Length: 266
Ligand code: KIV
Ligand code: NA
Image (cartoon, rainbow, N blue to C red; front, side, top):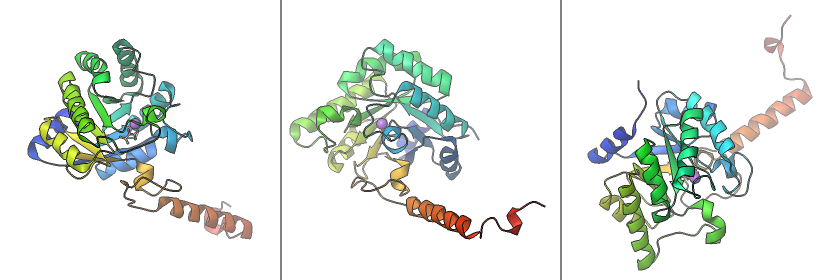
């Protein structure tokens, strides 16, 4: 069966069908999600926090995104793979954005890229789209700006902020974005944006009124240590299960219960 395309996502909005996106950072988990039927996988710069051990997404480099994106593409047959343009890889100029997006498409084989920002990123989105790069925009809470925002507060609260978010959404749509992520936005505002755009919105902490949803896979599977944001639902407890398996293996090595006869050659 062929890959999901951006046209399929546009058609889903026209039919009123919701879809799910998950992050992936390696071939093995990407393969699991691909086989489960997840239509869109995001090689998010959230890899900084949950895969590479950084405190924020700010240090993530093009080399890191490119290497893990290639692994995700290799691990999938059907999913549309979107890669984040990391902090500093597109803000300088539209030409810089295009150079780095093209690198991810040619070197890693991704099918689309995502970048943060509304009006401020519209010139870059326009140049990418004109060059044939499908672009997913990312509005509301934009984690690459964590140090400017002073944390991860909910966005779009109050009339002025709500109007700006709506303006940003329409601007990135006009620039040619095929979809818009809305992160940590009041549900009513996200539903309004979804209603006013013809391209699909992908919510994370943005309520049920979006066309699609995205979660970070380590959060939704219970792999993340400690607290997760309020908008995360845990569908499994993988961290506890994997820790239990590791401890049991260790105990059996110490006791001599592993390896048993059936694991041995003669
Ligand atoms: O990097 C990421 O995982 C993201 C999603 C949360 C939208 O940008
Ligand atoms: Na991201």
